Image 1 (cartoon, protein in one colour):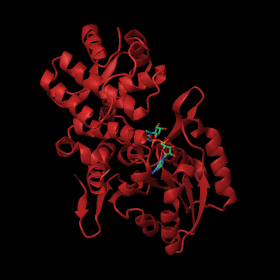
Image 2 (image 1 turned 45 degrees about the vertical axis):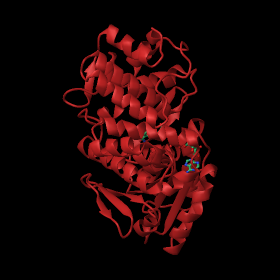
Image 3 (image 1 turned 180 degrees about the vertical axis):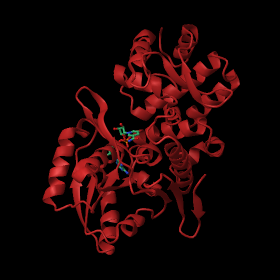
Length: 370
Ligand SMILES: NC(=O)c1ccc[n+]([C@@H]2O[C@H](COP(=O)([O-])OP(=O)(O)OC[C@H]3O[C@@H](n4cnc5c(N)ncnc54)[C@H](O)[C@@H]3O)[C@@H](O)[C@H]2O)c1
């Protein structure tokens, strides 16, 4: 990991070394206090959050008040339906009326919906004001708060309008995950296990040796797990910030099928649950292509299962393999062919147009009919 452990403060700091836009990800108990230190001296701060996160708002507002920072709380709606340009228009209007200026800052306290929406509002307000990400879901801690992708949905599709806007800091305290609904926590675990399969052997060992500790949300274990995932994502972002070299695309392991399942609908799957099924599919496809052994695929599926994550679609037969293939060909990252990110002898890499029989075997393994 690129970060340094600081046992006294129980915090792990991971530098994101982007030239000219470097920032730190701080993980651990009490991490949120760091927001006030980072923003001290700013005259005005807006905190964007949601009603469901109310329990964690006072910690942040008290820390800001303690540093003499005048902060205003703005709540937005919950869910994908509120991750819209209307919400952004509403937010930037409220920023203006609250007197937020070019050198002030926005703090996004929430999951990926708050982070993406508040981050995009910060990216466009006055052509860009500083944003601090304070992720409160497991998915946001290990994925969406890091890397600067911000944006909102259109009626025509998800995440179709957005901007790269790196935060000036990310502060993740796993203690806030205690209030996260079980399904949301599990959905975040789907992304966590992805990093283990992307090649983080220490993370994989932690997850395999004590899956119960992770599932039970032990804060110290979660801090280590979150820090490893965050460091992995930070390394990839530094290498390929704007997803041009293909390195950042490897983070899509498990996502080709996941996106198709989400688009097809009919399964009531959260994103991380779809990713978990997508990871099983990717392992079985890699084995069917003899890129990895059957035993290696079995081990991956066993870990997914030990973490209590889904390994097959909830109800067989809802959507056919043929329909999913058509959706996967339309994926914005596929260039019209059928593109997967798969494990193999050289590690995880892009694989184009695998033979139909291998895809069918992998579909069957996750309960999808041809
Ligand atoms: N920008 C990126 O790089 C990136 C990457 C992955 C996903 N995303 C986006 O992230 C979004 C999904 O984010 P998510 O999974 O965090 O979901 P979310 O933000 O919708 O949060 C899930 C639910 O949990 C609630 N919640 C959040 N923290 C809580 C807490 N500590 N206690 C109790 N309730 C809490 C929220 O209010 C919400 O109801 C999607 O819109 C996706 O497109 C973005």
